[in-house]
Image (tube, rainbow, N blue to C red; front, side, top):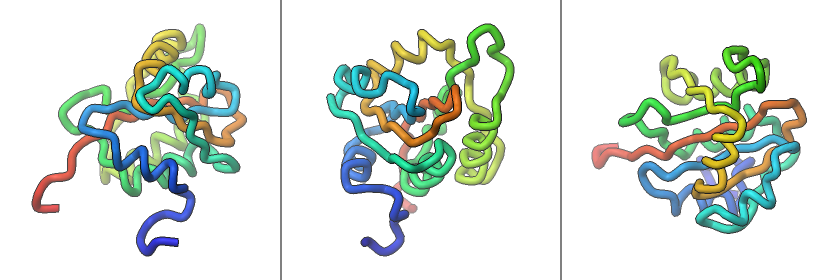
Length: 150
């Protein structure tokens, strides 16, 4: 155990979050996402796991240490529902609430078409698979910076 670090963040996840640089993309995926095969194409080349956690629980832990990019509009994204891209299911609303809480204000995620999301995931830094069983529990986060005075 480490003081001040969320105990849901395992050593592998912490190592990757620390290694990521400004603008690098992290994918947080549900249990149905092809996480293992997709992760093999990422920078890390390995699948990370935060099992037994919902997407919102995993994102809450991740955002306790990961700054989100403030220079771009696509700092966070959600996989759009096929045929109904504007609908926000409960799993995505829960993650949006965690983003807003971490940022201290409302910062809406962008929608990403399903196959564009798969392409982005393969080009990402890493993929974390959660225990989320609800459909469309897949998200993208772009790492920001921590200013010198922080």
